[in-house]
Amino acid sequence: MPTNSLLRAETRSLAIDAPPATVLDFLADPRNLPRWAPGVAKSVRVDGDDWLLDNGETEVRITPRTSLRHGTVDLLTGPGAGVFTRVLPNGDGSEYQFTLFFPADTPEAAVEDQLKIVEAELRTVRDLCTR
Image (cartoon, rainbow, N blue to C red):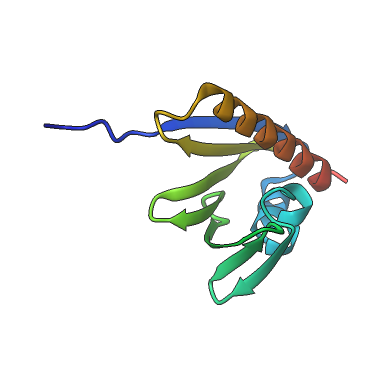
């Protein structure tokens, strides 16, 4: 009997008045993560190919998968799990897309709370890339 194992995907995007290479370079640099996502990482330490994120309470290992050619910076917490981002050309600037996946039974209020945080993080990336 088949089961529905699809997750709920939520994507947010924001135009940034900076070239895609500028935005991608910013996102791909682990030192910048605490600047735009302080709730996720207060500090980042590089360990081989992985980043160790310390949020003040726990340390999380992520594996970044960056392709400047394809415009992606994915931060993986496990097989198929993590944060998936894409930077697309948008005129002379960029369109920054950020996708999160949630279990189908995640309460709506929890999804909305997380998306508010994501939207604030997108604005922070925009502000830091256009200075």
